Image (tube, rainbow, N blue to C red; front, side):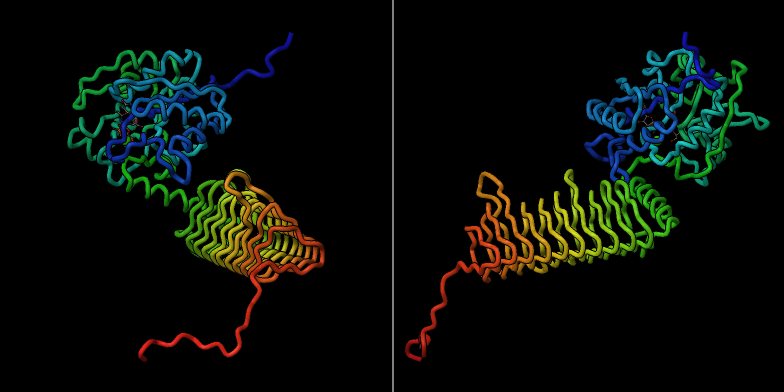
Length: 475
Ligand code: UD1
Ligand code: CA
C-alpha cells in the first residue's frame, strides 16, 4: 500500500473570485473584469495571483457578461496552470454575500475559502498567502488597509483592539465613518464556517443587499476569532471602478515593472514613459529611450539600444542591435528575430516571420515580412521584402519590392549571396536570383538570373538629339 507522503498542515484551498458586477462607472459594453491592464484582463491578474497559491480549485462568480467572462476565465486558467476552474452564475446580483453563496455547492467542507475581487488586479500572491495563513483553517481572516480617505469602503469596527464588525459606508454612523481602517474585499475562512454564516445573512441594510462583510458580526456572535491582517501596500488593494482608476493602476503597474527592470540594470530614459504589456527580458546594458511599448514576449540581448517611440511585440533582438526611433516590430505568432549588431529603422516595419542575420541593416520605410536575410544584407530605403530568402551581403535598392502575391497565392523570392538589386526593381515571384547577380535599376524581373549575370528589364532609353520642346501658341 502507498502511504500519504506527508500530512497536510493546512486544509486544501478553494478560491472564489467575485466577478458578477456590472461596473456601471466604466460606461463600457465590456464586462469590467475583462478590461485590460498591462495587456491582460483584470481577471487574468487576479487569477494568476491565485495560481501562485496552487489552489485546489478556482470558482469565478459571473453575472454581467457571464458568457464572455466564463470563456475568458477558462482560457486564463488553462494558461496559468490552475487545476480546476468553474464558473457559477449569479443572477440577479444581490450583493457580495449572495455572490459567494452561489459558489457554496462547489466548496467541500474540508477546505479554506479565499475570496478575491475580480476588479482588484494588483494583489500579490505573497499577501494572499499571508491571509490564508492568518485563517489557518480555523478562523475568519480579513485583509484591511488604512485609507486616508475611506469614503465608500466598509469600515473595520473594533472594540478594545478586537474586530467586531465591518460596517458599509452607507450604513455607517458619523463616528464609524471617521474610521480609517477599511476592509479591502479580501477574506479567508474555513468553508464549513462560511457556509453556516452565509446561510444566516439578511439584507436589512440601506442597500437591501446580502453583504459578505456581515459574516464578521456573525463570527463574533458565535464567539469565533476574527483576525485582521494589514495589507503592506495600498496599490495591491486598489479596485478598478472607472477609466480614471484603471489608468491610475496601469501607471502603478508599469512603474512596478519599470523599477524591477532598472534594478536588473536596464537603463530606462524615463520609467514614466515606458509600457510592457506582456514580458520583457533584458540582458546586460540595455538602453531604452522614451515612449516605447513592448507587447507579448520580447527579449533584448546584451547592449541593445531601443530608440524613442518604438513598438515591439513578440520579438528577439540580438546583442548589440540598435533599433532606431519610430520602428514597429510585430512578430505575432511567427515571431521576429533580429540578429546581433543589426541596425533597424528609423521608421522600419518588421512583420511576422522576419529573421534577420547579424549586421543586417533595415532602413527607413522598409517593410519586411516572412523573410530571412543573411549576414550583412542591407535594405536601407523605401522597400518591401515579403516571402523572400535573402543571402549574405545582398544590397537591396531603394524602392524595390517583391511582388510576392499573384492575387491568389503567395510565392517566394530567393536572392543569392552578394546580389545587388538596383533601385525601383519589381521582383515577380516565384523567382531565384543567382549569387552575385546584378539587377539594373527600374527593372521588372520575371525570370531567374544566372549567378554573376547583369539583368536589365526595362524600356531602353531613346535620346532624340536637339529636340525642341513644344512652345506656347501665340507666345
Ligand atoms: C465591497 C465591500 C466593502 C469593501 C470594498 C472594497 C461588501 C458588502 N462590501 O464594497 O466592505 O470596503 O468592497 O473594495 O462586500 N459583486 C458580485 N455580485 C454582487 C455584488 C458584487 O459579484 O452581487 C462583485 C463585484 O463585481 C466586485 C466585488 O464583488 O468585483 C465587490 O463589489 P462592489 O460592489 O464593488 O463592493 P463595494 O460596494 O465596493
Ligand atoms: Ca468596489
